[in-house]
Each structure stands twice: as structure tokens, then as C-alpha cells.
Image 1 (cartoon, helix red, strand yellow):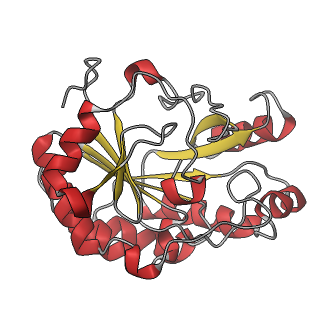
Image 2 (tube, one colour):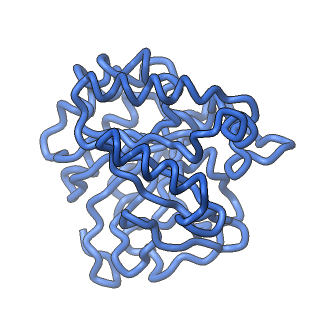
Image 3 (cartoon, helix red, strand yellow):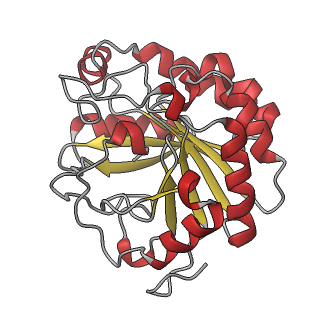
Amino acid sequence: MLDSYNRNVDYLRISVTDRCNLRCQYCIPEEGVNLFDCDDILKFEEIKDFVNVAVKKGIKKVRLTGGEPLVREGTVNLVSMLSKIEGINDLSLTTNGTLLNKYAVELKNAGLQRINISLDTLSTEKYKKITRNGNLSDVLKGIEAVQKAGFRPIKINCVVENSSDEKDAREVAEFCKINKLEVRFIHKMNLKKGEYTTVEGGKGGNCKSCNRLRLTANGKLKPCLFNDIEFDIRKLGYEKAIKMAIKMKPEFGKVNNINEFSNIGG
């Protein structure tokens, strides 16, 4: 699907929930966030039906995000449903890794192809501070579990304050080198201020080549992370929402005043 700036939009990111079992400082403010009503969250059948339509329109790559996608009961079943859709050549998931020790094998058997795992530091105390009481060992066990399950490649998302030359980032990079993981450095972003940069080691943040649509957990299709534009797939219907999102996809991101990272998936 070509947008108004001749970019081929073939990538759909789906937030399956706005809930998370961590409270990372750069994702969730100290006072918390307003969560979607449970009745407003898309059912798995709705997601599957929407993806079916999107694939017929040209989507080839699908990524499940959150919040934390694995805190939603049945996400493995959703993976299985999506893996059976002909035309998807890349089905992946972004996770904080804390539940992968439990679900790695099930996800592999369900047809998931790739996993991105968040890891910002190898310091137990700093990890606890960043995530507000998360347990680093849970993530390390999760990484080991997906390696044993046979996932390749496994990508690590490392959020940095200013530079990938920071102490924690260098330690994460060395950990990835030793364990044959691919690392991507993501500079802290601010939706309300419109602050973002290109991901080091990835393609995110480059507006000129952006090929993404985003579906929020409550059914809003967004053509840009840093924009308030969104289309309700339930009210408009799937085909019309996709058509309008492609047509209205902006050339560059600016600001997003209506979403949080916790409910749009980053």
C-alpha cells in the first residue's frame, strides 16, 4: 500500500493490551495511567479478522506489542490464529521478557517467528529502579528460554538516556555479543514533546522510510506514532479505516497528545 509520499506501508504493529507487569519510568509516569475499560479492548477474533483484511491490502509484517502482550491471557492463542493467515511473512512480538520463561516454547509452537526483548541494564539494582521493582533475573531466564526454544534472531531493545556509549548500554552490548543476540539502542522518546530519533541498529524513527500502521488495544488505527490522527476500526469498518490511515499518513511525526507508550506499543 503506497501512501501519499510513495512509502510502501506493509507493517502492522498491534497493541493487544495496555496492561503491564512492570512500571518502567520512561513508559509509565509515577502517578500511573488511565487504563482502557476491559469492554473496549479488541477481542482476539476482531484482531484476527482485521489482520486478514490488512494482509489482503498489502500488510506482510505483523508485530504484537502492549503494554506487555504476555500479561493478556490467551496471547499464545492469538499468535496461533495469526500464524495461519497466508501472506504474513514476519510474525513477531515485543516483550519485557519477564514471562518468557513460561511461554517461550508455547510461542514457538504457536508459530511466532521472532522476539524483541527489552533490556536496559545488567545491574540488578538499576533494573529494579528503572522498572519500579522488576526482577532482572526473570528477563535473563526469559532470554535463555527463547534461545533454547530455537528463536533466531533474538533482538534486544536497550533504551539509552543520551548515547549508546553509556556504561549500561556498553554492558548490554557486550552481553549480546557473548550470547549471540542482536542489540538495538533506542533513545528516550517523548510523545507530548515530539522527541524521537532513529533507532541505532534498527529502522524505527526514520520518517522518510516509515512503513508502519499501529492498532491500539481499543481498536484505533494510527498511521503515525507521533501524531493524534487515528481511525476507529469498529465504527468505520476495517477496509475504510485502513484506506483512511494510508491516505492520512503524515510525512513526518510531530506530537501525540492522546496516547501513552503503554497503550500504543512504542
